[in-house]
Image (cartoon, rainbow, N blue to C red; front, side, top):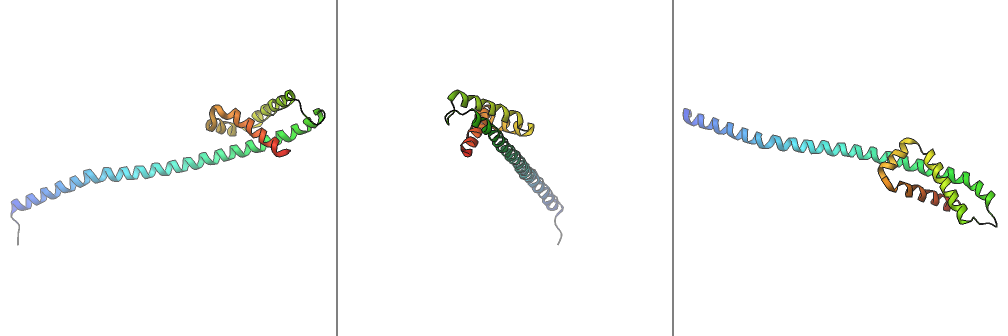
Length: 137
């Protein structure tokens, strides 16, 4: 059985049209799926790197604040009168502790904290210092 040449030509044209239609629709869709997958993988890696950098920065902040509070506790013992600090003395010690923590924090940790907390970084540092003072009591 042989096909009529016109029918064969029409079927060939139909097949070409179907293949080009499928290709026109399927390929962009497949590429968009592949692009979305790659983007998700890249974001996952970036998020893990960011998380690791922030954990490192917070660990360094914790250790630095603890060291500074331990150092200043010796000074506190020397300047306490009748077992208490005057409010001015406490404020001065907090300022000293803040300056020491800020200056001793590694540059990469400070940059990571600055990018994460922005303008609230000062409050974070003060809060960490105060928490270390409370822990040491």
